[in-house]
Image 1 (tube, rainbow, N blue to C red):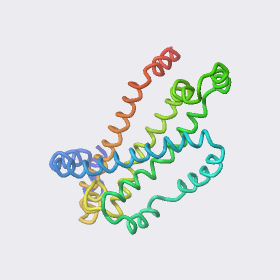
Image 2 (image 1 turned 90 degrees about the vertical axis):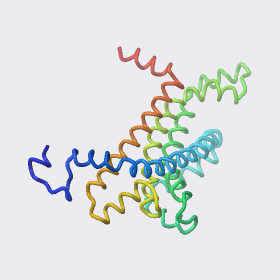
Image 3 (image 1 turned 90 degrees about the horizontal axis):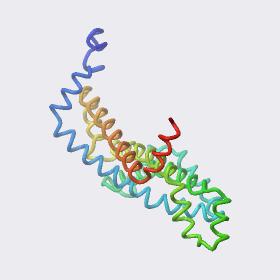
Length: 234
């Protein structure tokens, strides 16, 4: 390994062996803080779904909301979450709420945008055909628009769940006494570079696991999509 061959000091760049060894040694510590971060991510992402999906449906069915809310959503997305975090601390304190809201805000935009694009992707002729034979708008949404939008929805979920991890860590950097972000700050203050990298590895593992869970759920919810995709690749 280059860190060994080049004799790079551990306090600058520890070797993967040092990092994995530290992760094994401090596994209980990392697991405890990881559970805190996972809780913040799960709550924040769930909140973004509870707000984002109904909002996307409203935007699709209302031109007024589409014209009025789209600029607001884009404006919020352009604001760095680090800038919003101190305001949330003033409003909600150092508790769980601040981290959940940051995770929600940062994962909210891809969920809403992909949902809007998915719900709008239904072919107009298909929609008109349904209306012409007397199918209600609710049934068109449930049987046509929603299944057609599922690939877009899950694309947004995959992006959103990984961004929710980023939001939770930003919240822990600003205001926290638990979590991997807090652990990384304390390790950095003690110049414990090995533990800093160990927390980064733990965050990467959490992000990959959450992404994989969404991918597995996607295959369970719409097996027809992946079957057709696999057939088209042959």
